[in-house]
Amino acid sequence: MDEDERTAPKAHEVGMVIDTMSVDELSQRIALLEGEIARLKAAITARNATRLAAESIFKR
Image (cartoon, rainbow, N blue to C red; front, side, top):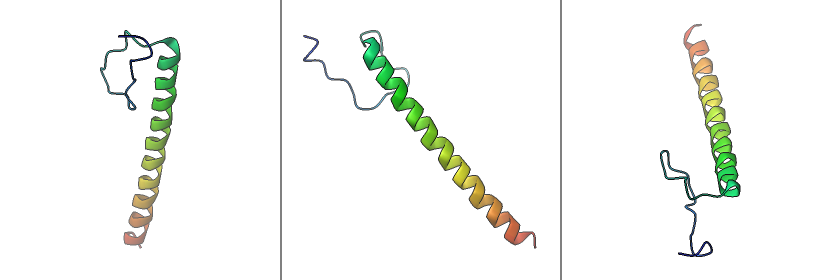
């Protein structure tokens, strides 16, 4: 299989084989995962804010 014929998966899977990935591909994976981490942290922040707002209503 030629380098050009190989297609990288669009999403990273935990534990997937990375031995054949180039430095550029690995860097792209890191950027993808960092973006996903930021998205997940934002969701946690939003859910905590919602929970705190609900708790404040019931503590009156």
